[in-house]
Image (cartoon, rainbow, N blue to C red):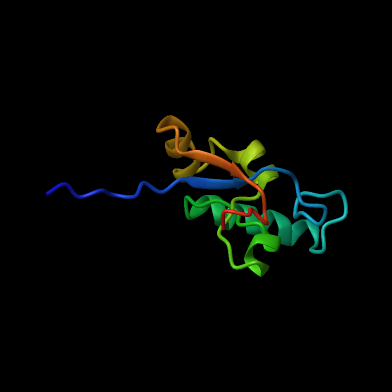
Length: 94
């Protein structure tokens, strides 16, 4: 009997959110923004889009991915293994 394992992908928002942490006028201070990014990278994680959180999805922020894709453990590993998937926030398959 063969067992199939589901391989997880790193799902990244296909487009930048209009209310992104990286937007010109984020809803947090510059100091708080820097702290969030620092903590995320220190934990070898990616920054989850707040709009994705509201939609109960775990999606990497597109701008975070574009800027910091080689700065943590998760994202470069997913890139190397070809496990990055760019998705829409409200994908009809979800």
